[in-house]
Structure formats: structure tokens, C-alpha cells
Length: 109
Image (cartoon, rainbow, N blue to C red):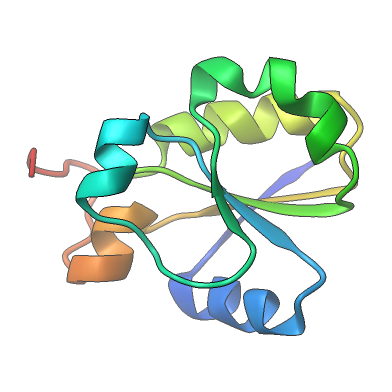
């Protein structure tokens, strides 16, 4: 399975379709500080992805997101290896999504 990197705009369009779930893999404290709002968005920290595979296997398409995209890429790899057909990573991460200042070297917020 190949992981696809997508933009914020592509993710927004996919979420509008309603046939996809976005998994924010940051820790709960990070998720509470700032997050992408909307339907079909859940917080499952990276260290709980494996134990959540039964739930996540109900979805054929999953978008992963984190602060930048490092943890999201790791989560997406786990999901792809578990047989999820379409796995995406938002390349801007939550930081770029909300604040529009994406780079590979994000400052701590």
C-alpha cells in the first residue's frame, strides 16, 4: 500500500464527501490546544493506533494528521500495513492547516 501526501485543500474536499475519516495522531493535550474542527475527525494518539485497528478497519479511506507530518506518516504506515486501502497524510500538518506557515522545520507552538 502506498501512502499519499495531500494538501489541506485536498483533505477538505475529501472530508466533505463524508466517506473518509481524519485521525489526528497527536497526544490528547496537543489535540485540546488546537485542532482541525469538523465532522469525521477523531483523536487517536500514535501510540494507540495499533490497538485501534479494529475500529479503523471499518474505514477504507483514512487521512492522518499531526503537528507537522512525522507522526502522521508513521501512523499511515501502520494503517497501510494493516490493509487499509487508501491512506493519506496532510503534508502541512495541523500547524500549516491552522496557521498557514508550513515548513519541514516547524517551531514549537
